[in-house]
Length: 77
Figure 1 (cartoon, one colour):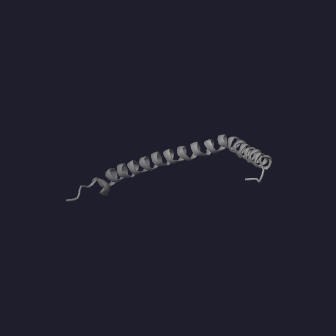
Figure 2: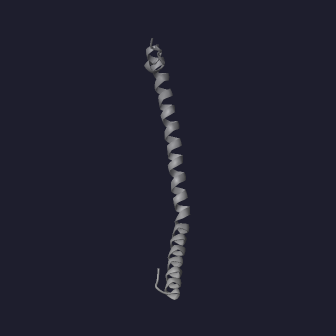
């Protein structure tokens, strides 16, 4: 804080302007960051679905070619 009321007021005004500039920069980046987040979430969901389908496909092929239950579905004692 400044030594006088006037210097303190200048410091407060400078700090306020700096904070407004930071908020403006963040507001500009917000839509881009939201798109990135949506892309990551969509990629995670699609990857999960692809892995699930791949596993089901392998289990189907295992049963079809070996005639046995896949090892992942065999119950152990």
